[in-house]
Image 1 (cartoon, rainbow, N blue to C red):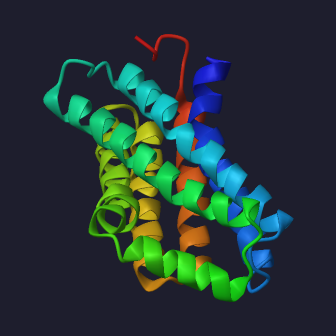
Image 2: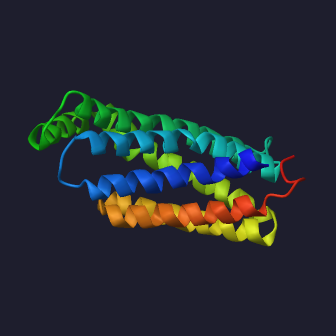
Length: 194
């Protein structure tokens, strides 16, 4: 039960920490703080898969089509986001300054496949999978339903922040997701994991 709870809280907690590091380092380029922030985001991103598996266990919906779609979207989207974060970590590893960072990002975005996978399609598919998972919680008790709704609302805020490139909005969305998953985690009882 403790591991299941941790699997829900760890991804958004790491994303809140990573975004906080990046926001506090804004304008300094790809320095060590940039790398730490991205590594924390990388870890949080990877943990969305176990979080989704926990939700599927809680809801008992392994065989439902929506659950399979949610898991597939989360896996695919997480891999795409990992690619985006890997590009950022390469920028740090080779010591790019701000001007060189802009050139690298422009070059990556000039490739239609990379633009689609890393920025336009992959991340929204991750959010769609997480959103579906949050909606799957609506068949459970009051606390899990409320937490799922907060997670879903937070994901919408994250997406708005990403589309507007306003980091504080994205951070606020992840805080809401964290609180929502904490509520869901607190609602897990001894018989809730199938």
